[in-house]
Length: 221
Ligand code: DHB
Ligand code: MG
Image (tube, rainbow, N blue to C red; front, side):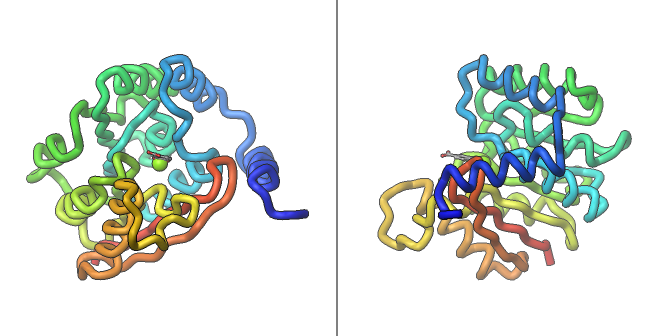
């Protein structure tokens, strides 16, 4: 088979069908997101399942998500924290947060999700002084990735996990002269993950339903 975006999508569909299957609550969340006019930039099903597994593999009980959108990844992680767990998820757009809240409740995990409305840079300081988070998923405006990583290190616990979505950007991350603020923000975040002693990180490129992109995974040391 020739590599092409269509071939990546077909293979991703096959993997999702084989390993994940039909999931009415998640599909309803995507339908509500679409209906509300939000872009289809949620994580792919295989990535949502990966988030779910990383939460369970790391034993995370307190999860922080920056960038709720329609609540798709939130539901995946809320299922993983267990009945006594908590996902705090931050969404800048109140209309998105309302849709996410309804989808999260309809998925049966509303009791373990706290949706905070506001920009990350405003909401994150409010979380200081609370119990530390075991896992932080950063998936918001890429321009602010270094701010979010700094807060992840401050609010996370040593041994905690930090995951950053969208680190591939169609390969544009190699362009040191890029004028695209999302590329610049992504590159600055990756540089921080490489240089800042609070993180021990790697990143994987991905191809699939969401095109050519990637995810970074870090341990808080
Ligand atoms: C964009 C943001 C995302 O979180 C994503 O998964 C894909 C694209 C974007 O802002 O372009
Ligand atoms: Mg994303």
